[in-house]
Amino acid sequence: MEKYKLNFELVPDGCWYSNLRTILSKKQWDFLRAEAKERSGGKCMICGRQAKRLEAHERWSYNEETATQKLEDIISICHDCHSVIHIGRTQLKGDIIRAENHFIKVNKCTYADYIRALGKANEEHIRRNKISEWKLDLSYLKRYVKED
Image 1 (cartoon, helix red, strand yellow):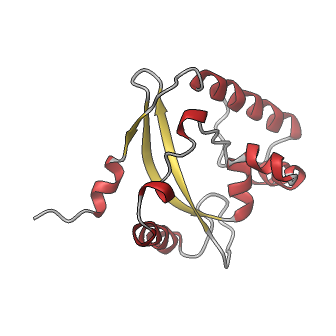
Image 2: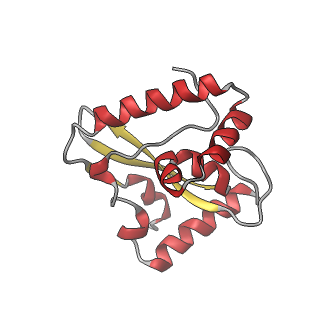
């Protein structure tokens, strides 16, 4: 599969509510968002565009053998990159053309490449949806816990 700078991240249906905003307190989430924004230097961590308003995005990996959803990173990204990552939500909101164009621009690819990548992401999503229960690995957050 082609490796792109900006990719679709279709979350398995069984993991839709396993996000930090629902697990952590508002204060904890705000701290993590601020830390990601500071690391970004005011630029989208995917496309590199300077942005006044950046959104926090949780990067997850999925181990299908162990049925584990693992937090890998929290990054600060622009709205356009976030719209591509969560393409299903963007389609529902009706802003698909802008997301398509952003994917193509950031990845320097064609519309056919976009369609191919979306098809592969959908295949992966269907396969992952066969797993009904995912374990949650938040070991990434240990870096923020001070141990004595």
